Image (tube, rainbow, N blue to C red; front, side, top):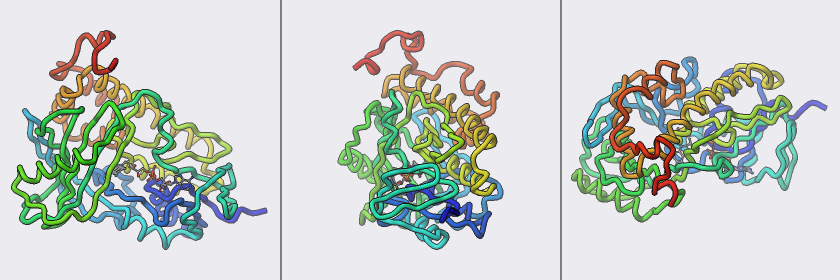
Length: 379
Ligand SMILES: Cc1cc2nc3c(=O)[nH]c(=O)nc-3n(C[C@H](O)[C@H](O)[C@H](O)COP(=O)(O)OP(=O)(O)OC[C@H]3O[C@@H](n4cnc5c(N)ncnc54)[C@H](O)[C@@H]3O)c2cc1C
């Protein structure tokens, strides 16, 4: 019997939305279904990405962008820099608005209980598809073992006269406690900022009140008076010290998005990688999704994952929590093209060598680097 859908995607988050948009753009007749446990698509996120880190022919991404800036700043105790790389963001609300009309079967409020190569089952239905894609997000990442964590609180606030023309991607001049800590600021409009307090921590503990206080302190220090808090988002994202390449089973289903390791272990970001995988899926019919090209794609991403995890092991094992900012301060002294390739997980061999050679960043524990035990990893 013919399958009801070409694609059935489980989880209606970022990865699912990007796949649906890409497939609809490249295969107008494809039948697409999404099964999502919540009542809306996309959760509660503002997703940012370097605007040039998405596939060159991905016109389907353009309507997603709610804000775009020509460049951004970073700040550290001994380095302040403006980068000319364009930066963009989208939101859960925009993803929901754009994805709903392009899917043929939208099953909201339904939890998938069985995900098989050609079938997805919930409490109220079973749907069949030529290709099933499991994109259930970061929830199942606990099995990755030793990990650092990115914990953050972001608040969208109305302020008067902030005067910011472009984002502050990383302001690490704030007090360093609990890990590598920085504030991230996006000017969403003339009177609205998204201010996020982020810690690269050793544990997945998020102290929301502490984050809110840090945001208030940062705003006050910049003379911004917060008139209203419009929205809040929080995150606890694993930054694993080791993660295997995506496992691709030729029989399916394809595990995509964060759940399938299609993300950046050093930054916790996944937009560019999810967009690349979406473009790959859309470039061939559902019946040809599995096979050697997909395995090659997974292997290539696995190589980038391995290097990113190596950087995580150095950051978390060789530097005490309050010294980790030194690593990022040094990194932001490198060439801008390399920085962009780092974010998009497209580092070349030369880039990797460039990151690793030279004088180590300040604050490195030689004892830890030589394999000795150090307090912050054994506590
Ligand atoms: C607050 C926040 C902000 C972030 N900001 C950025 C950013 O700026 N840039 C960036 O690149 N990355 C960012 N990330 C990291 C990453 O891109 C996101 O976590 C992204 O949403 C991961 O995409 P995904 O599709 O893999 O998972 P998700 O977007 O989490 O989607 C998974 C979906 O699966 C659903 N689901 C789970 N189990 C089931 C089930 N059994 N049945 C049905 N549905 C199910 C969930 O409800 C969810 O909607 C952010 C993360 C968070 C938490």
